Each structure stands twice: as structure tokens, then as C-alpha cells.
Length: 229
Image 1 (cartoon, rainbow, N blue to C red):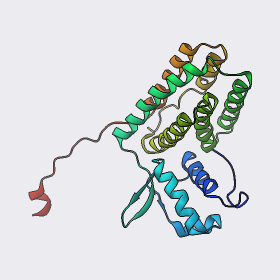
Image 2 (image 1 turned 180 degrees about the vertical axis):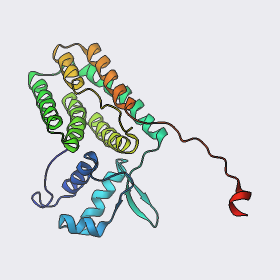
Image 3 (image 1 turned 180 degrees about the horizontal axis):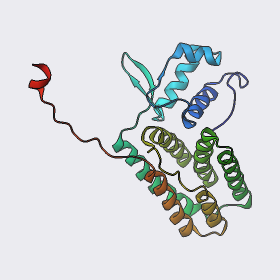
Image 4 (image 1 turned 90 degrees about the vertical axis):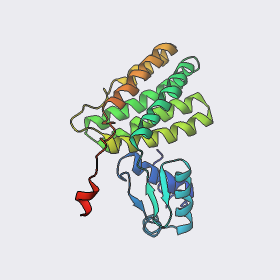
């Protein structure tokens, strides 16, 4: 995500939206958080109108939800939606890297390796917020290198939803996905082996999903006589 400060960037709507999205990606804005226009306008030093437009953009992207008479909230994907997010990512990203392997340039490989190095450094200093953000940016960068604007938009939304899913369903004590998997995907891309890149992406996404607790809660039978008598 861009690190642009809305004040320094002329307080554009896009800059405000990017800062809010960055906070979500870094788990600084948890799922279900109410986003109050007045407070955000004060924090960013902008009008409520610009904040409202930024929130509308993120709502359109599926990252926020608006409830009548209640306000705007950071999204809280259900278990079913969480599974759909990973299903969509598998359909898109395996095909994406398979095609990218045949077109990626040396510069593109270098950009991916720089991202991987930054992620490794953040892991080494135990900076969880930066690690989560950089991990998501790796997948966005893959879409950017492919040059398809529609895929970039889809990946932006899916990565944002994945961050919310992880925040909601991360299983305590479960190991995070192995840090070397991004490197292995880049190695396959550099070798021009699309099928290998796709297989490694599939394993990577399975590992991410495998660290989550995506079980539907058991249905509880309610004894209304006992409850209200």
C-alpha cells in the first residue's frame, strides 16, 4: 500500500482511502470498527466530504460495509465469505502466475525480490504489521506486473478481504505460512516455468487458509420456555 500522507499529498480522496486501507491491511483497524466521519476528518485534517468519498470508494471495493442508521464499519467477512475469498484467489492467482512466467522481465523479477527482502527484514525484527502488509503487496505486485488493470483491481479487493479474514479467523498457536514460499514463486517465474509457479502458488494459498479457523459455529437449540418463563 502507498505510504502517502494525505496532508502532504494535498489531502486527495485516493490518499485518504489508501491510508485507511493500509491500516486495515496492517490490522490496525480491526474488523467491525466503526469509522466516524468527524473523527477521520479531524485526524486527516480534511473535510467530511473527502472522508465520505474515501469511505464510499472502500465500501464499493467490499472492504467496508454501511448499515442504515448506524454508519460505516470495517468489513467482517463470514466463514462462507472467507472460503469464497480463497476460492477466488486460487482461480485468479494460479492463472495469473502461469501467464506471467512467460512475460516477466528482469526488472519485474528484481521488484519481486526487493519486496521479498523487505518482508524478510520485517519478519526478522518481528514487525507483524509490516509483514502482513508486505505479504499482501507481493500478490498485488504480481498483478501489476501482468499489466491487466482489471486483475489489479480484483487482487486489491481480494487481498484486503484476506487481511480481514486473517484478523477474524487466525487460529492461536498455528504457524504462519513458511516465509520462503514467496521466494520459491519468484524462482519459478524467473525460470519461466508457469506450471511450477502455479503449483507453488496453490501450496502457498493452501498454507494461508490452513492457518485459519474456518469452522461454522455449531447450531445451538434454544429452549424458549426455559429462557422466557
